[in-house]
Length: 133
Image 1 (cartoon, one colour):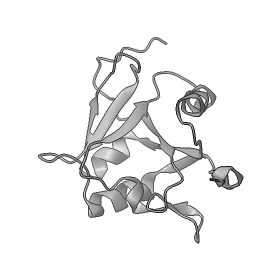
Image 2 (cartoon, one colour; image 1 turned 90 degrees about the horizontal axis):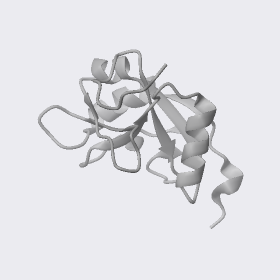
Image 3 (tube, helix red, strand yellow; image 1 turned 180 degrees about the vertical axis):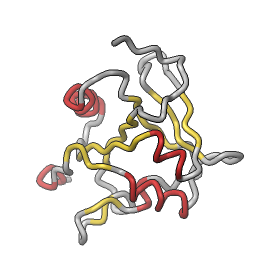
């Protein structure tokens, strides 16, 4: 299957997001994502699956982020159920790039972030031993 980055994002597509070791993104006490993972005044960067395997996407994140932590995914249909828009946003160095944001505003509010967090799947659990600073 070939990936065309200019096509609209189908409901069956998965969107991947790196989990960074930030306290507002990961609840260290409960060992789970915080809604702060999606809450932002800017559009949320994600990667379309682009007919790639989970392993290929994980490797891509590991090579891009200097402090790798973990990877999550959410199905496009779940983003839409949370009343957020998903837009392809390919970059010269990343044809898989897309953004999640609320209609009529840049970014994602707290209530929408909570909805998105509930539908998010951890693909590779955070590597807590890699948090040394």
